Image (cartoon, rainbow, N blue to C red; front, top):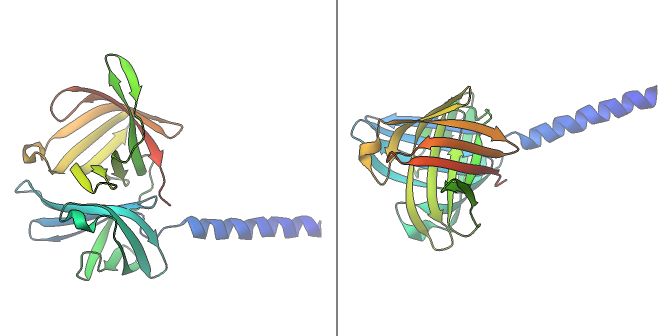
Length: 237
């Protein structure tokens, strides 16, 4: 009886340690704003993005992101894309941070700023997704993995896609904003779009489902073309 009690206690302690190891105080989305200029940070499953845009004026300003690893007081960052300069791709840096309740203080922008939490990154779509299949002529074509990739980084309420090639330091485009996923209906509300500012303010709805880490959605693209895609969940932890 005593041995059983000890074993149960050990399992509870180990589980507690595992949870602490898995917890990420940065997970989710963060925001700060100066006049009409907005900054949004998303951290999920070891991948991050920092994007700056002017929604009222439909102006995309910049975006960079890549792999991150949080410590207790610092974040290690490895850049995979940067619209400001391709020379930044592949570089590493460490920045300090402090999370207090729903506030994040960090100099990730180069200037120490306070951010407000938008969400905690806990939903069935939260994470990093990579496009792996696209319907062509009624057949789902699986994409061969390579250096070029299109990712969709999701918190609980925000999304951002980015088409990049870290190996060649190429950037092909990005867009994002807010989203909802209710009763099989996935809706994106576009707040920034690097390739076409006229898309800002548009809402796109898709029929969607998630099964075994594969997210399928179908509908129409921002250009109005039929779209049916498969995205597979990835982790950069």
